[in-house]
Length: 359
Image (cartoon, rainbow, N blue to C red; front, top):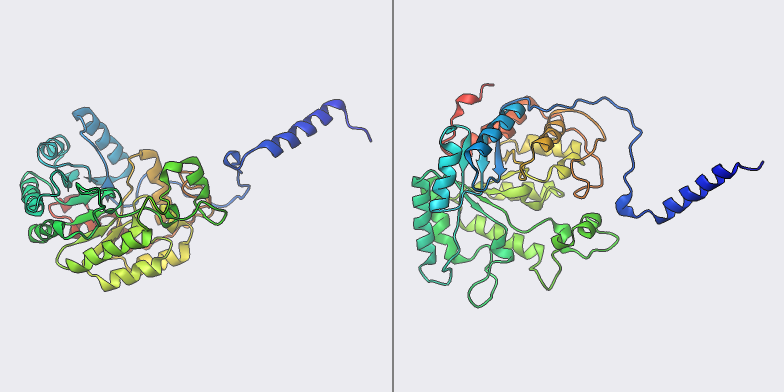
């Protein structure tokens, strides 16, 4: 039977399109029909311990609070507080009219880091920042990866010149939320077995090739030595310590170091692909994990609620390039949810008004 001319043209066009389409353009739509329990609001009021708001204005803060109320976020921790005058500005803007809705963490100023007295000076500045309203310290990933001294030498995560700062945190009773390294796959060759290949192809600046960067293993070892050397300091290991793909190993770290906590910011894709084991793990370590999100985008929070609270199956992650796999719900018990959402943060971060958290 001869096909009509138009059918032949469409067939040829379709074949040609399929042959020329790149992997980056491929976005298959699932035909699976299963129960869905989407929600825009968390089951319990929650504290987001990993957010970034840089120099917000009063109008920005008003909108932040409206967005927080809509999703049941009771407290936002701004990790980008700065130090000195910028810290005071952030505290005034965020806590001026909403003193119980925001927490501000200070940051270190690395100016003059070659000065033998740098550590003592940085510790003194941190003490002043705490007097001015800081409730914790955030360390960014540049420490260990890109921060250098005056001679151009890389400064390791556990460099002893920062010891006065960690001791000050212990003395002041404030936690250190520290981001070290990046996902392990970013440090590996961009080859056919790298599961983050698509992300690295779309965003090549995220690659951390050998020769230009210290290895993932070396950076993480430095971080863990730091934790062990300062047992009286509470550390919050950001992003599940980049070990969400190996929760057994992360559990061993928590077992070994009782001063270490962790949080789930920007690594939901790790938990959502291993729902049974992640559920077991979060139940076992329910006193050591806090809720975090990282990038501020209100439309993305419902994916966290869905993974943590429901039994839903095989649904999309909110960013294509972070994960090509689907998410599954963990259906966490209420007691674990409450600890993840607010109880652990109330215990670890000083000065949060617990009156909003009714069970």
